[in-house]
Image (cartoon, rainbow, N blue to C red; front, side):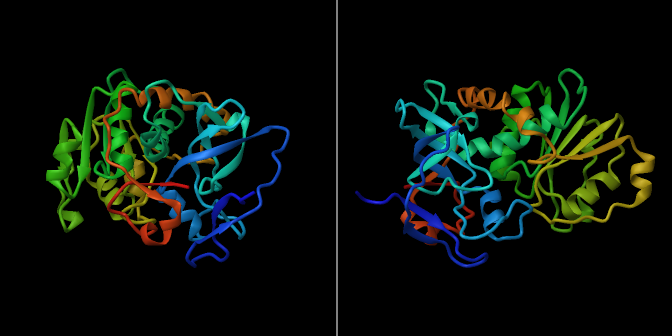
Length: 305
């Protein structure tokens, strides 16, 4: 009998190795899943670099989530394997970490975009409080994969107005926001006054962009700022007078800032939301070609064993 295939890192920072590995017997709370697809998310690369807070020890198999066929009944399920494990042919998954796919939902769309959707969904459901009806949201980095989904998530969860921020006006126009903030090459020259009446900020950029927004916008109402990603930088220098002079609540959203117990009931809601999401572009790639596509940041890649 052939051994299942897997992808492993044997040292942080080195190329992944495609290999055959013996499959361990499932624990009493686990069920074997034949992996159909697992996405190449930003967090996957980050953990595999060895510099993420969830990076553990090697050998390490990347892939934080995916879609597969549960071998016990052949049903399609979405599974969470954070901080890793999805990039293999067969994976033992805890039953509480898998949810059956709703009928009519594209499994490859889920593999590519459930993780990005989770970021904004949990930010709005677990890391904000008492948002007003038909709230206004600013999505910083709205043309990134996570940002595009965040625009749709915000509307599903009750946003009345969505403002998108990006460097590319042409790309941002396709996302479907109500208003745009176009980043200048010199961040300090960007006019962010359109964000004055926002209730919540979902930030995938951070760095000097976040510093500029929080420092220069004269917010007219209490603002809940949620840091989610660092596409523009991992640090910012925020003067103390900014948070003394404005009604700003600053939080982060990611595993650790919300509990698994808080996340678990939201997963089925996210999967059902895929019936309302647009169909986004994905590139399906055999896992055996991972070295060729590991650094592909232009396409939304999902690997299939």
